[in-house]
Amino acid sequence: MKKNIKIIMIILLFTFILSACSINFSLPDINIKESSETSDLLIYFIDVGQADCTLIELPNGEEVLIDTGNTDDADLVIDTINSLNIDKIEYLILTHPHEDHMGSASDIIKEIEIEKIYIPDIESDAKFYEDAKKVIKSQNIPIIKATAGLTIIDIPDLTFKVLAPNSMYYSEMNEYSIVSRLEYKNTSFLFTGDAESVSELEMVNKGYYLKSDLLHVGHHGGRTSSSKKFLDSVNPKYSIISVGKDNIYGHPHEETLKRLKAVGTEIYKINELGTIIATSDGNKISIISDQLSINDSSATNQKVQFIGNKNTRKFHIPNCSSVKTIKEANRVSFTKRENAVNQGYEPCGSCKP
Ligand SMILES: [Zn+2]
Ligand SMILES: [Zn+2]
Image (cartoon, rainbow, N blue to C red; front, side, top):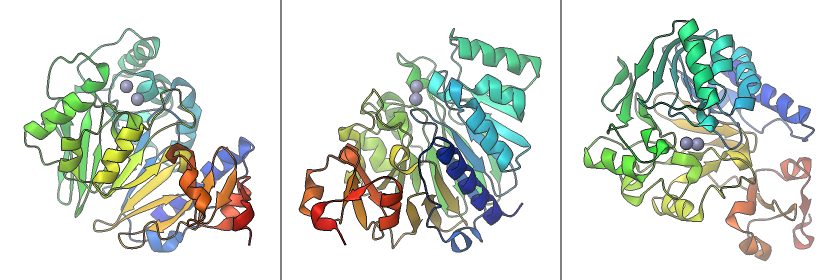
């Protein structure tokens, strides 16, 4: 199926799912043709709330799924994979045995053909983990214990390599997270699971080439990940944070956002934008979501026309004096007035047309 048709389908699917939840979303304001006609690589950061699930359609026709979301996300993830006419996932990477990363693994493995599974060398006695192990065993799917240095794919123009874990033992389960780096022609992507500063520093100290155009920010933007040295080495242009609305952890933490801003990266949060799609033609990355127009290296953020406050449900023009009083965590940006209105926001007194 053509990639641009696929993008239309995925957006329709998410719009359908959101409208089924009785939230009134409009179709995204996206120039789909321009953004995807030459895009060979598609990465879907799926909105599974306070959890992780990333689906990657590689330019060689193979599919990668990094994490599966929580236990109750199985239907959403399976529907998404089916709606894209994906009949097989060649590489399932389960970054670490926490429920928000592999809670749906057993259900997904039952429904979708999986060729190989990559997990870190650490066990868990949690039910979701035991369930996943049983299904994997019954289907005879090869398991590869992933550690730093493993090459998953290495073909012309496309490499996919594991950069962590670098140690056998950590005191935190999150530090066992598989960290992987994908490079397609002149574009690169780093997926960090819930790796925290111990693992990050190991990668820096081992001298791995970490520089990447896009960073899937570690541990949902928690303060114990995204350490300064690591971010300096990655120096991402785009940062995606998988985080749920009003999550009990207060993710993403202010300190993390500050450190990200200090390296000049553009930040995209799933709690504000819903599912985020990154595309690459090998030279240019575009970020697409329900609430963003295409962004490219030059035009990013210039398209934010209105800023909303999630608490008061009012929206403002960017230079309205009220904007300064909105906490970062409560901000949401809109590219069009009608997008704000469609989501139930009202203009503030001084921002009425
Ligand atoms: Zn975790
Ligand atoms: Zn997590």
